[in-house]
Length: 249
Ligand code: SAM
Image 1 (cartoon, rainbow, N blue to C red):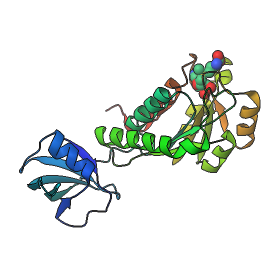
Image 2: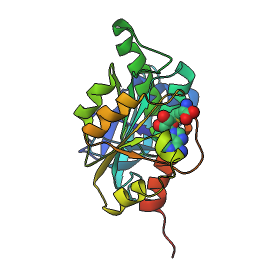
Image 3: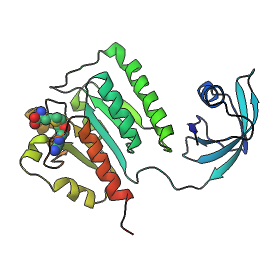
Image 4: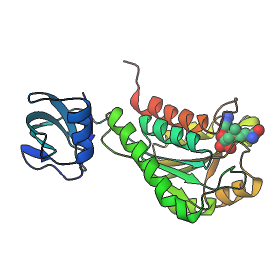
């Protein structure tokens, strides 16, 4: 049941797959043969059942017959951006993979006062490309229709350029003061998009919170327990899935 993203919109009933990444994985690694089925998603979020009809190993390509599927979308019904303070490589890779599995549409990493890391200008492109690849693989694995966009911001201040309908900052001090209702109140207004910013292990500096509040980011608590920096965005995404995707029948 492998799913792959193709780069061009599919408008025909059959296709020659020349994408070397897909060829390598489907034919070389998984050894698919004629008659086997894979799934393709195009940039318009359409899902196709693709039956392999002709594997041309020499030419490093294969052909498929396509059937458009009307299966329900796997995307969250709200556009979600998680914006996380920069941390070590393994943590940001983990955040990228898990946020993708949980449905984030945009994943931002930003440098803040107590971030333990900072990226030099000349490494940003390579690091973002690596995270984007992790997001693509996680989106394929979790059968999403969209690959989340990964963005790096050199400054927390630039976050205001990415504002959505409902902008939040998960603030540990709000949680410690017993703030338990602002996230629920915000979601009850059923915004079409939301962004939540998460601080580093050392938390947000008070002036960073002031700046975000002045720019219409609401400080919210995420329950009485203080989570690690990488756990808090997963809590937020899980809350959204519970609210928008699960129901009592
Ligand atoms: N060093 C801080 C402290 O001791 O209070 C804790 C920072 S926490 C490990 C990292 C980030 O996760 C916070 O800046 C916040 O964005 C988020 N976070 C964790 N638990 C939270 C909670 N219960 N409510 C709101 N935000 C939380």
